[in-house]
Structures are given as C-alpha cells and as structure tokens.
Image (cartoon, rainbow, N blue to C red; front, side):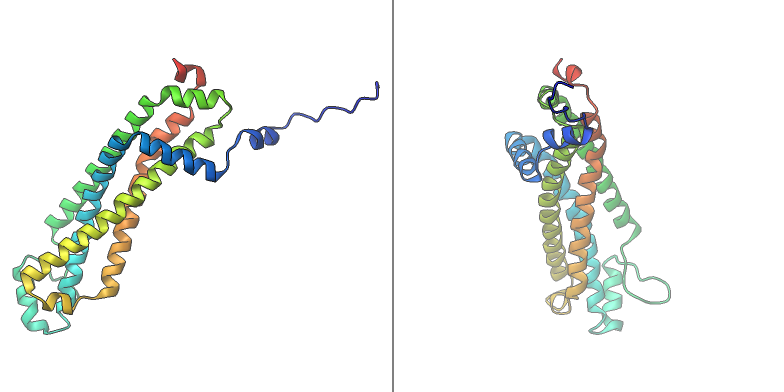
Length: 227
C-alpha cells in the first residue's frame, strides 16, 4: 500500500543456495583436513592397504595358477595342487582354499572395524570444528559430503596401493613356486580385473565405514558440538 515492493517470500531453496559450498571448495577443505591429521589418516590408509593387499594377493595368485594350465595341464595341475590350490570338481580353473578365503574375509572385517573406529575418533576430535561450521550456516549435507570426500581420497589411495602391492607380491610368490613360466603364461586380463576388483572393494569398504560416523557428525546440534 505504501508503494514499496513486497519482500520476496522466504524460501528454503534460496537459503540452501546461499549456504551450500561448491564441490571445488569441498574438495579443498577435505584435502586440508587430511593434511592437518596426517598421522591418523596414514594409519587408516595403511589399514586399508594391508586388507586390500591380502585380497589382491589371493586373486592374482589364483590367476597365475590358472594361466599355467594353458601350458601343460597334466603336468602343472599336479604341481599347483601340491602348492595348496583347490581344483573344483568337474574341472575348470583353480580356486582359493577355504583357509585363504577365511584369511581374506577376516582381514577385510578387521579393516572395516578399524575404519569405523578411526572415523568415530575423528568426529570426536572435530566437535568444535563441526559446530563452528554449522553455526556459520553449513548444512547437514555439507558435513556429510566433507567426511565422504575424505574417506574417498584415503580409500582411493589405500586401495590402489594395496592392490598393486598384493599383485606384485603374488607374482613374486608364483615365480618362486613355479619359475618364470608363471609370468610368461600370466593371463593379463584376469590380473587387471583382479586389480580393479580389489581396488573397488577397498574403496567401497572405506566409504561404507564412514557412513555412520559422517551421519552422526551431520546430525549434531551446533550448540552441543561447541560444548
């Protein structure tokens, strides 16, 4: 009535656009956070490296054993079985022994527990930081995104390093057991698939291990975090 333009109605989407940060800035904050906690990040990454290395070692070693069957199946079959590999009923390639499967499963389980524990401790150490960000307008999804990015970077580095380390160890072990023929007959495509599979499993393990701690951090009240 006084001729002044009406104020724009309050909109949750407008507020969301104002306080949300771009992905580029989120990545920068995640990198700085990892550098600031280098020791804890190194321990978490090393745990992941060891677990993925076990998985990669077991898979690539089986790939090397299967590749030897293409050379002289009757001769190598007996030697490979004597080395501790299982030949399934009805033929086919060699597979891991139950003992190997249990070792890999237990290593992955221990890694998952270690990752969750490390993330929970990281959340506890950053209560004030989380509270400050939320007081400045950070949304829950930004806090969640920040922890997921940190887990993704550490998981990618640890998974790639573990996959390569496990594969090299498996190739060295196969060479000691069966000689140079194991490297000559190596199925490259199967080995590459094992590397990708091991790295993907490690990355998934890292991300799944941070889901609960990240959700807990994102749901914190600013006042409670500051206390």
